[in-house]
Length: 452
Image 1: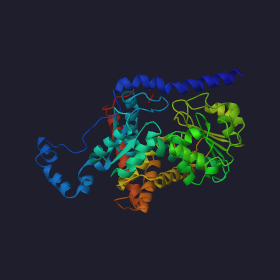
Image 2: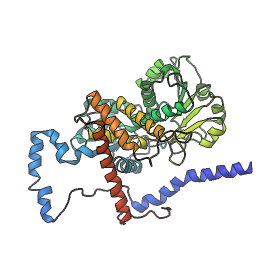
Image 3: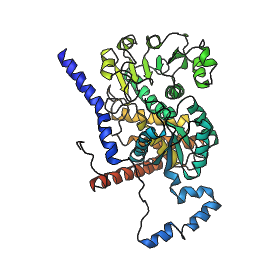
């Protein structure tokens, strides 16, 4: 018993270390990204080419044919990470300034993992129509927009409106990104436990933007919606929930109508009873999900506890309760079901074919490629989906997404799968090599207190 207690203390210490390091290193670097030139400066005369008078020539060409902006500027590879700071990680409505470190981190991951030039923009408004208006005003200078950490239900209105009105791809990573990576993990977890996706009983704890989007995507991937039992803060979703029916949350009411074939009532314990899979994206733990609830799930239970920064239950406790496979949203535990495995590759493929939107089918294509990459490398209970170190997954995702965009007719450019793969590999490798070179040459200082 004493040995087990020490082991848990060590695990807790490891779990708390990222926050401790973050408090030291954020003020050390004072930001995670910066803008550096990509064009050659061979002398002061070069500015006559890159700026006035030479720049007038490409300006006039773009005026004649607006699509030439993708050839003459960095629009083809530039996106904005836009948030109002109303639902940041598990911290809630902390405001646009407090949300900026997250958006900067997102931009860093976009560049290093996907070769995408992303800039963080936190907005001083909570009005969904103002957010929509701002994105539409910014779109001439952007190749795409990643919406981030916007509270529900307004996030649905913002995304749906922008997908309809914008000329560039707009997606909400908390919805589509989370859904794609979770779908990949679910596909492989069910392979591991030898259960069919159309028969699996799935408990979903949390009915926010993430789980609503996950439900939509996994249903398209083969899950029977009648086998889903979803829980929000007031209990299980069912047709008797007049509070949802009479609200403006149409997406949640839709789930009431299509899920829960037995019309189960109650709360989290009742939803989890006999479930094959738990997908939790709810209140940060570690005591949101109880061990005894997991023990009442089906044999070979699959548990996804993905709240940030602390999962709904610690993974080792879920295992002790009988779960066979456990995944979290954290990189310091096995089976990280994290958006970072999705958005860099998905946006890479979207930008490479100059897609006009990002469809659910493009997300499912990415999910299947994620799952196949892990399968190719060898699935086991602690390796459900690739890690961020498996860098080849990002160009593979990009190629799968690009091919689906072409198939659906939403791409401006057409390429073969081989061409898409080569394009993504070249761009991503260049980004990683540049970062490595700057670290080796000292342009990016070594982080103090971190063992390299």
